[in-house]
Length: 136
Image (cartoon, rainbow, N blue to C red; front, side):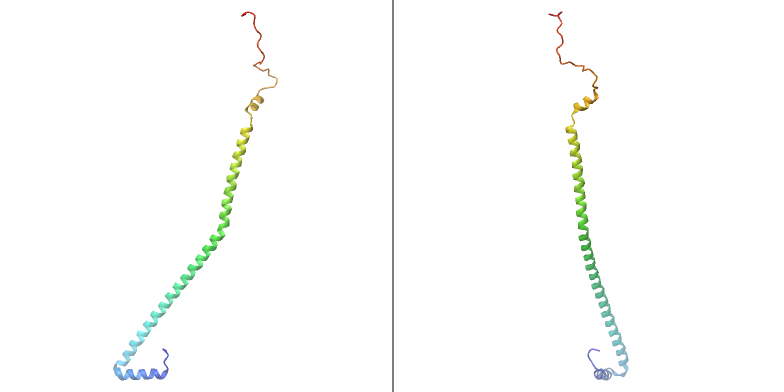
């Protein structure tokens, strides 16, 4: 204890008995024992608190590492999602383009000509009407 041997402790006890006297010495020893217990308890509590803080710091570092790993593993998924959205937009544009192309290439006269029957005589003639002699 404190780097002292048995002989040094005996010398300190003898000096304390001479200095304090046999009446006050037992009470002084009890007070010193209480003081050393209180100091030891305070040191142990400080050590436990420090150990808890160190453990909390380790847990914090570990959680930051897990967060970093999670973010790194999520990057490919985020990129995949963006690529899928781009593909979907591209498909929508292509569908719209094909719709516009089909509308633009359709001839409205084709649909009208399908409605008119082939056997039906044209109602309008491109020939000149015969000139009537009554007006001339």
